[in-house]
Image (cartoon, rainbow, N blue to C red; front, side, top):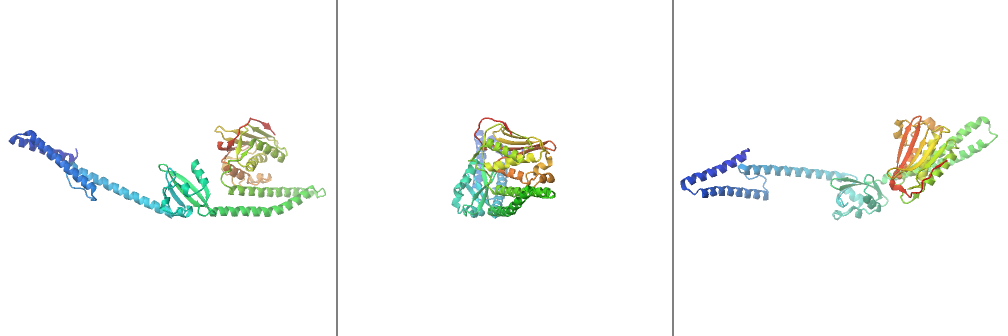
Length: 438
C-alpha cells in the first residue's frame, strides 16, 4: 500500500482511538465518534479549498500537505508541468512550421473540409492576391476565381495538379496542387510556372521555325530526286544511290512532321476535351485502309470491331497515335506475317484498342524505355525501315491527354501486343457489334 494511504489510515485510526479513550472517561461514545468524523471531514474540506484556490491562482508551486492530499497535490503539479511543456513544444513546432512555410517561394494555404481558408503564407498573398485577415474563413474558390478550380474541387481527384491564369496577372500561369491531410483538411500549394510555359513556347517556336527551314530544302531535294528516279535516261549506276537518297529525304520529312506533332502535344493542355465524340469504329476502318495502302499489301491485316462504342477525344490525335502502332507492327514484321487489330470493351466499361503482330518482338528490359524519344531497340533495323524514333513518344502523349494507358506484352521472336486502354469516362454511344477484315 502506498505510504500516503498508510498515513491517511493512521490519522483516521488515531481519531477513532482518541474518541474511544474519551468515551471511556466521559461516556457518550456516539458523540465522540461523530466528532472524530467531523474533524476528518473538516480536514478534507480544507484541502479541497486549498486545491481549488491553487488551481484558480497562477502560482506554480503546489500547497504543502501530507497523506493522500499531499500526493494528489504533487501528482497534479507534475501533470500540469508536463502539459505546460507539451504546449511549449507544440507552440515551437507551429512557430517553426509557419516560419518555414513563410520562407517558401511557393504559396501555401491551409483549408478546412469545406475548402475555407484557415491560414496562408506571404507567397500566397503575392501569387493569389490574398490581401487581409478578412480572407480567413472564406472559400478559396471565392478568392481565386476560376471555373476550372471549382470543377477541380468538385471532382476531388487531387492526385493531379491544375494550371490556371493568375488572378493577379492574367499573363502569368499558376500550378495548383491540393494535398489532403489530417481530419479532412487540405494543403494547397501554388507555384508560378510562367517561366516554364515561356520556355515551352520558345521550344515550340524553335521546333516550328527549324522545321519550316528544313522543309523548304527537303521539298526541293525530294522533287529533284523524284524526277531523277523516274528519268529513264539516268545512268543505271546512279539508280540505287538516288533511291536511297529519296528514301532518306522522305525519312527526314517524316522526322520533321513527327517533331512538330510531338512538340504540339507536349505543350497542349493536359486533358483532351470531353465534348467531341469520335466515331472510333469508322476511324479504325479508315486507319486500316490507309495502312494497307501504305504497306503495299505486304502484310495481311485483320480488324475485329467488337463494339461500336465511340470515344470522347481529338480525332486527328487518336488517328496519329493508333496508326503509329499499326505501322510499327507492319514495320517490325516480316512480309506475309499477319497483323491483328481489335477494338473491344473492357470489364470495367473502358475501351481497348489492341494491335498484335508476329514480328521480331521486344526484350523485356527494353519495355520501360520504348516510349522515350529516339529510343531504339535495334537502331540498324529501325533506320532501315525508315523509322524516326518518335512514334511511340507521340502515342504516349496522345494517350496521356486522353487519360489512357499503354500496356505492352512482347516476346523476342514471337511478337508483340500493344494495348491502348481508355477509361470508361471517355466512352459513349453503343451500337451493334460488327467484324471485318482488310
